[in-house]
Image (cartoon, rainbow, N blue to C red; front, side, top):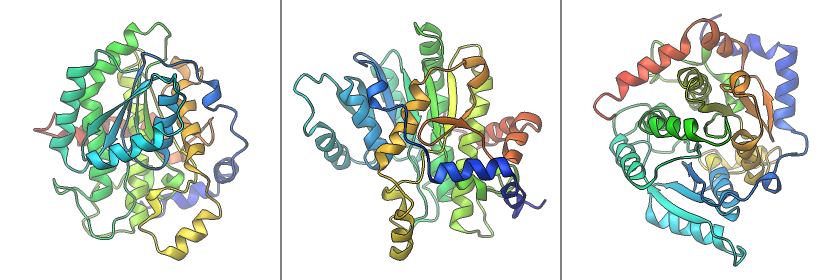
Length: 335
């Protein structure tokens, strides 16, 4: 089926339809902050941690005494986030918040922040590639000229992952608990609306135009594919790589939609803390690394499956390698 309508067939799948309904209206979360141990001494990285899900995730980690690197585009947003997280924190909390100042839509800032991080820490326990854009009222491209969703959500995170994977892999090899070091790629059930196999291979930048949802959906399908591909490439190191749909949430991601659409969406959306529950499940729930690395987590902490043709692409048709090679070419001179 053509790339524009590849998702239509999948909507007819009864199993996918059942799962999709539970992603819109998930059961009560069973894995929350109360399931986490003391995280003192652990080091975590969260991109896009100054708003929405990322901020709630950073707060949970901080209150469990972790060292949290907060990805932010500005000092001001980082300090506002720190005030939000630390307000009403218990006096005996030993967590730390550290600024990672970068703009995923400008690759040199990503390289600089990776170098800064590598100079400061000797391990990373988990990283969440959480930041993302969904539509923009004025910007269409990144600084390097990529379509905005592709350049920010995909290329920026790919570069960061490329630079940090050696340390993540070494952290996984030396971890006392096998499978505890993880790379988490935040996707979305918007992948239902991505092109066939997830990617518009002939024109990832949609130079001839496309709906904003299609561009966003492609970027989130790429996260699913990259999570699986990284799991294959790092199977020997023990680094676990997962993707997830955090859920339908009330966050800043919707601020560029018309007001009437925001209000309509809020009727079936939840507080971003619930999305953080999905993200901590992906990072901390017990799993079998050999069988479940590369998997896909759905709200509020359950294993599910992406769209069938996307799965078929990366398991049988080499789309993971194809995407990895394409992105390697796009970051030439940055890694």
